[in-house]
Length: 331
Length: 105
Image 1: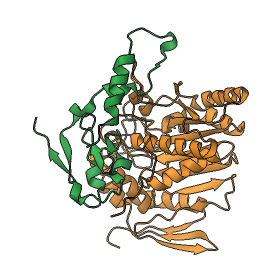
Image 2: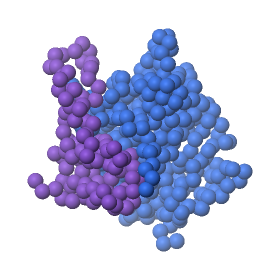
Image 3: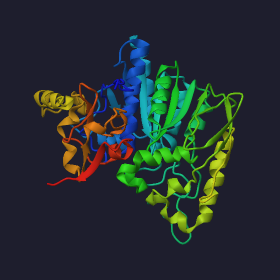
Image 4: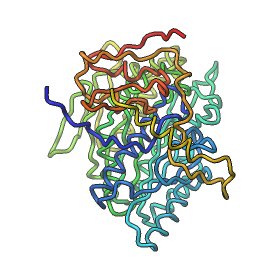
């Protein structure tokens, strides 16, 4: 049998020994992101190490940099919760002044991006710094004990949105930071997922190669906060794509009329018009995604909440210009 | 069997590590976390069957540690010093060449 080459570089920038929980999806995301980044830098500048990382406080910062050790093999700076984008802007400006070639990667969690670092992120995008901002979205403040963030989806249990007699858990829809970033008309904005690593790596490389700011929002599973089995992390992320919960799209130069949408797979029927996806008929009900996670367990006692969720997903896809049909279980 | 690339790293880190406090608490040793052997967290361990492996690299891509490296023939090798036993590799393996077994300690 002919031996295929590994699909990604074997250089490691994220090394073992970090303190992430077993089965951490965000660790997968950061490992792949740094590998993709180094490949892109090698192709663009001929130097695989021509990048530096600025990271906001969050799960992945806490687990990777337990003093006096670090799990990073790249220049890395930890900054406060709100200003990863601002610090990355500063590093980029300094590199420009020094005449150094390369790109800066800013990393933040969903709390550090969608809630606390929103202003710094907006400023970085608007000032057109040559930075890629990677938001790893595990949909709550997992590091401090699973509090809700604005990126927490409808119906999810967190310690600050407990379900009960009068509550169904988080009662507001998810905030889509990727769409907010695209409204800055930056060259490249994308959503990705660890459920489709090849797509994620391709998007990271594309983001690293554009001149100007880019934003990538990657969904990664958190077995601790989502109360899901350790080994199902990647499977849950894949089900999120296949059931329509997590759309994969790319927006270039803020052009909302030409959003590139990736076909979700999982047996979904895709209708195209002129090369663009206009309608998707999903075959897997969202219950398949929800039932694997303890944070949605209470929803099965209130099925009307799952219908509300379906309406919200349809509305989200409508923003992207796609009509979707979501099946109910047994249909 | 190829030597784990992280073994070499441990030697380097142990040699260069110093207890001295640095200004601004800067860590000068990249990748020094390799000295923390997280393998003791494990309950189930992945067992690899080389004959069933088709070298799709999915386990190598998905390992969050990463505790999987590739040998000269590009087969995955598991570094049990770091594997936390999450089981993502066994769950994603298309040919079931990896199975999780309870580790006897």
